[in-house]
Amino acid sequence: MVEDYLRAFEAVSPDVLRHIVNMADGNGNTALHYSVSHSNFQVVKKLLDADVCNVNQQNKAGYTPIMLAALAAVETPKDMCIVEELFSKGDVNARASQAGQTGLMLAVSHGRMDMVRALLAHRADVNVQDDEGSTALMCASEHGHVEIVKLLLGQPGCDATLSDGDGSNALSIALEAGHKDIAVLLYAHVNFSKAQSPVSCSFCRERLDSAGKPHQVRLGGECLTRCSHLVPQALRCYWFSQNEASSLNPDKQPMRFLDFFFYLCI
Image (cartoon, rainbow, N blue to C red; front, side):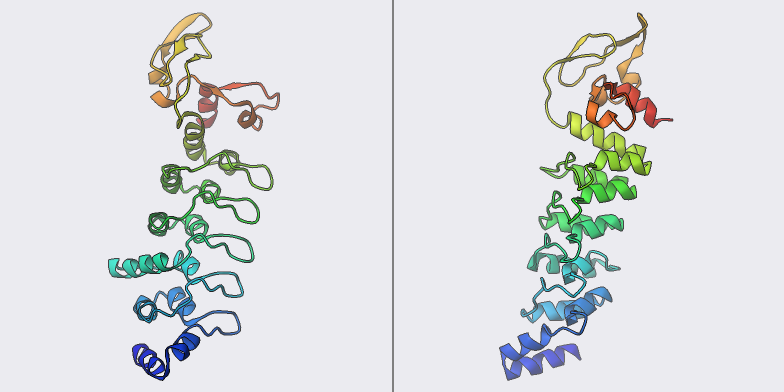
């Protein structure tokens, strides 16, 4: 029936079709908003095929059909293909007018891994910040979505050091929320994602290469074990930065990574 109406409006004129398809109700929702929010993807496909939809039109809550699609229930691969077509036709980085959130932030906050993957495939920017300064990574860290955190950190250019309006970053947010597994991932990404110059082990002072090769850890003058038995290779024996340690260490003394690692195991 929807297709019949679309054809009838087009027969009058393309301008009439465009006007009617993009008409909004009192809340600013168009036919595309409604069909997406109700997961009626067959209608979404017909509207997209009409090639007159303003897919970036915001309703009064500030959401575009793309943002609503990030939360829509998708049951079949065919439906997902339609969602991806929608993403390809609009601005996946558009920010909601009220709070500045993007479709990626919404998908991340609700743990929608399928939508997060689709948005990233269509060039969603992981570093966009909302009105409070939050990023998609901060949202994932706060809600404890560890697999989404891994996915976001794997995106080229993902900046885990960005701070929000309160001065918090993804690591401090994860720690405050009690997500210690995510805190380890974030710490590793910030400190070891780029090649580093040789450093000394904070325990035995042995010089290490940028990979932190295995060596004996000396505590109290006695060699106890190898670093590789304590923490993953990429995380061995580096200092936990003073700024990140401040919330765990009121005296603001530099914290060794193993101290941080053991703290997370408590």
